[in-house]
Length: 266
Image 1 (cartoon, rainbow, N blue to C red):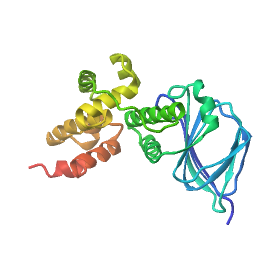
Image 2 (image 1 turned 60 degrees about the horizontal axis):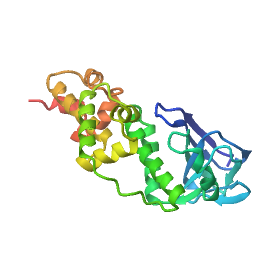
Image 3 (image 1 turned 90 degrees about the vertical axis):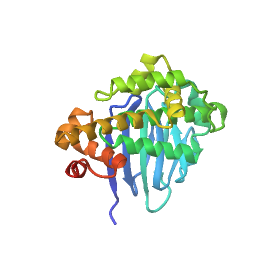
Image 4 (image 1 turned 120 degrees about the vertical axis):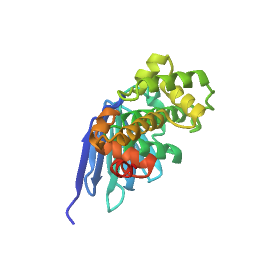
């Protein structure tokens, strides 16, 4: 079979993410090179072997690899079938230069929860309109990465409850149901760290901020559909990216598509 090289790359509208890079390679090997951003890597099929700071490392499927900026590394398939990987290139928003040394010492992190959360970030990034979800999930990923690098542990501190902050964020989301709001903008408005904001809200209401916002939008969409409006016009009126974005979340929360819901009105 001929060598396979399949690549998808884009820059999302999510603070902190310089680039998203998905690739499938069978024989290609990267030469030594550097990045000016943090490289957060997960491998879905196969495995990659690489050298970082003159030490050899590998990426089995349950590993999250974090390669620091400005440190040379290479990369090559570790199996005959090659590898399929997903990469986030991150600026210093979530990880500071003070953590570079710790990442050089141990770039491969075996943490199933972290691996799951990184995958969830990627899933949100490929869906237009779900930037708040991607930003929220990435904030928790950054928090867990910092815990690994600083404490050599992977367990985050138990978050303190903050019902007042949670209520203020809920009120802000209620005011911005249609236009929406980014996590960092909300954190700035409420003078809180983004990770603490997400944890305070989730702890108080049992739902993440992005899930709450989508629930409010779907609630409005239901009312407009029952008034006889078309799904496409309802999507615009309730803050969804497009009709497909509305349909995805509507079906998740209601069990049917907006069109079937509207057709069932009696």
